[in-house]
Amino acid sequence: MTFLTGLLVFLHLVGAAIIVGTWIYTMKRPTVSPGQFHASLLSLLTGLLLVAIHEMGDGDVNHVKIAVKLLVALAVAVAAFVGQRRTRRGEPVSTGLAHAVGGLALINMAVATLW
Image (tube, rainbow, N blue to C red; front, side, top):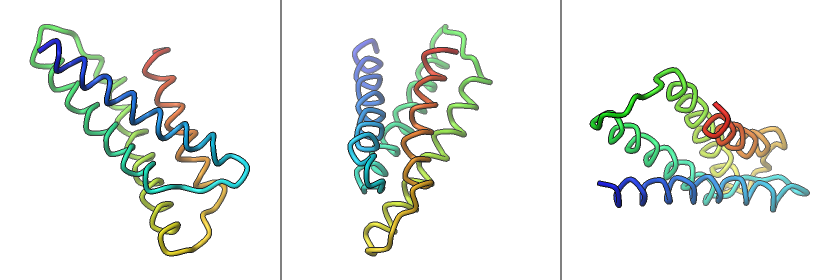
């Protein structure tokens, strides 16, 4: 179980790194890439699995923190979905939408580490 938890944490962090890294890389010309959408789904899924594993064990889960992180993660996924659809259609992606994807992912990382 320790290996599985470690693997899920690793994949969770990789997803967050892809979202924020792509956001920083495209800061001058903000856009949303399909990779950011897929990374948001990766982070969302691995986060839910980590909570499920933690719930099955003896650990205490801060349900308020998990609820906040889940809402922010869902907002990132929805914004990334809308942005990547516009990118695929050749439509312009608004600066606010592109910054929402990266900024909310960064906020979610801050909640995870500072709360």
